[in-house]
Amino acid sequence: MFKIYLVEDDLVFVEQFISQAILSDQMRVIGHAAALSTAFKDIRDLSPDIIIVGTKDALTIIRDLSQETSTPILMSSPTAGINVYRDARAEGAVGVLMRPYSTQDILTQADILLGLDRQEDMLPTRERLVSSAKGVTVARQETIAVYSPKGGVGKTTLSCSLALAIKQAPGIALSVCIVDFDTNMGSVAATMFLAPKTTFLDFRKYGGDDLDRATVESLLVRHESGVFVLAAPDRPCTDQEMQSFRPERILKVLARYFDVVVVDCGISLQQDNAIVAMDMATKVYLVTTPDVQSLSKVFNFMPLLKVLNIDSSRVRLVVNRMRKDSIPIREITATISLPCLARIPECPNIAKAIYERKVPYSLKDTLYNTNMRQMAGATIPLFKKGRDAGPQISTKLQTLSNLFKRKRGER
Image (cartoon, rainbow, N blue to C red; front, side, top):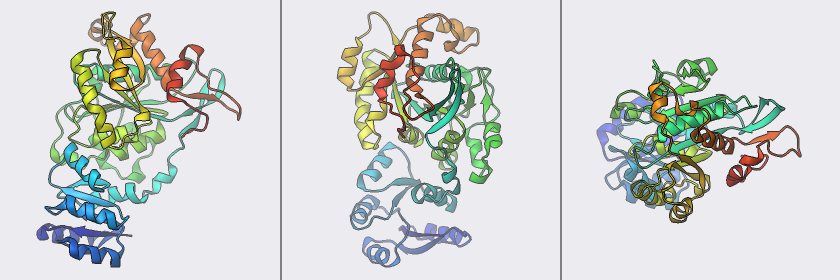
């Protein structure tokens, strides 16, 4: 059982929350204060495991508390969004809770902060054995967040094509899942011409102990290529639904059962799903088109990586719809200060593929298909089974894979 200390000035809410917490056998509220002076003394004497701050001057209190204690601090706020998250993190909070929060919300945060999730020990290491044409090899589990600060750059189409390219990589059998984390009418299912009966919101029905492989796959839909899809609702999510949405839990579970998880992030940073996906990902692919409007959006987004504590060494640029008269790659990378993983050419046959109800990667013998295969090859690190074995990546793709400086045993 872990201990919660509340710094809240809404006494009615505090009484309601404490009455809920009394019924829990996993947590208890050990104290409450409405002012910083009282909180300081209580926290020193009571040694809570988590502190929740939700007063009108919450940011000031969080800043002062974080200088005096190493106890994790959560900020509670009636509103959500990138500004709230950024400000809370800047003052020393480790996360943000939407108010009114429930005991289950606290339990979820405690699982993350205190490592109380029993299934966490069951998570696989990043390396795992997979079958290949050359025998057993080692593949590192990859969670890839695909994001763009601008709409209309082909991000979702590229995410779907990347998932298919990895799944159909010759000589290696990898399990692949693509996740649609767009909370404002995601389009992954439509792009792959699927009609799912479940969405990521259905994960809320299950506790950690229920999420075995069969249960997880029941929440997904399988594409004919063998790629599994976790769809988004075909309508915007409500504020109430977003309060119970736990993207970090979903990604942890999927990483347990799939060698590669591709996350198609929504544009908006008002909810935490895109932020969480980029934070948890082994790689982040920032998609742009080679036009001034898109590039300026990416350029303005770059400072946010530091604000959100996202390691920029995991971020790579993907330039989509390249043409002969486009801005040269060397000028793009010099301006944005990111290595370019892939340049995907504009393909006039994509419209034809969509008309024929096919994912564009299905276009064989095209530059689009070739470049997507190269991008997939740079994404998947493979090693021979054995201490001194080197990477099993073709010479043609070695330069791309070296962008990530993969080493055997890297976590």
